[in-house]
Image 1 (cartoon, helix red, strand yellow):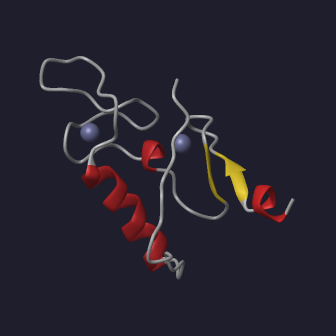
Image 2 (image 1 turned 180 degrees about the vertical axis):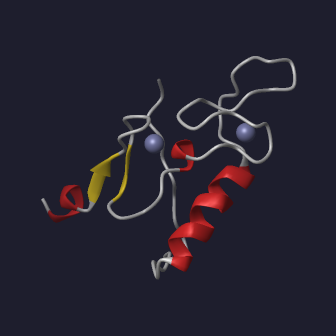
Image 3 (image 1 turned 60 degrees about the vertical axis):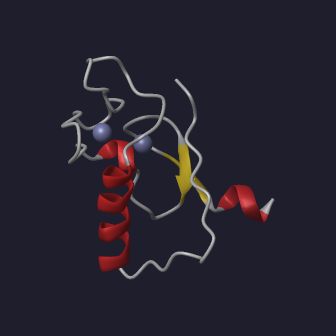
Length: 81
Ligand SMILES: [Zn+2]
Ligand SMILES: [Zn+2]
């Protein structure tokens, strides 16, 4: 039960993430300019299956600035829409 307690539902996209961390989807993507809460886009305009690495890094940078340390091996899972 402790593992579930460490997860919090994202208000922006509804997926679960570690409590206290910034959800990448709650940020605009610096790569494809997707709006906060929107999936990343391919150059063609189709929705991308994954989130661009730059978006993850943007969230991670905010988390680190807030004093959150990431484990060496972190697996980020996002709920599929
Ligand atoms: Zn989210
Ligand atoms: Zn993107």
